[in-house]
Image (cartoon, rainbow, N blue to C red; front, side, top):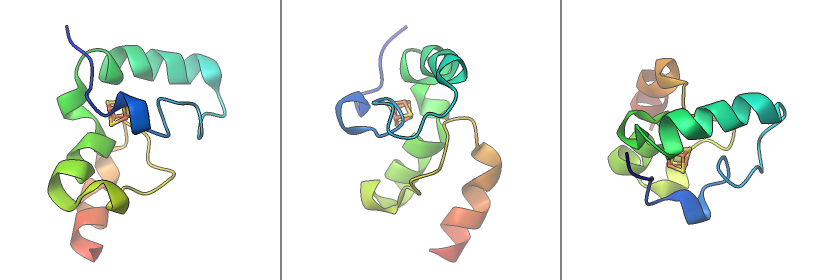
Length: 72
Ligand code: SF4
């Protein structure tokens, strides 16, 4: 198990977008502290760059990836 290297600047991890803290903590355990390569935000960073990550994109919203990458 390892941590995502984007943690320090990630608005999700730093609670700038969490409206349900308990759910956010579960997502942090699942993605930020474990399977960060599956995180939707990380996938956009790799594909398009950090500035292209939608502010409201949660780590578990992989279903939005094709829409985001296609539009860009
Ligand atoms: S939300 Fe994604 S990009 Fe942000 S720290 Fe967690 S795993 Fe990394």
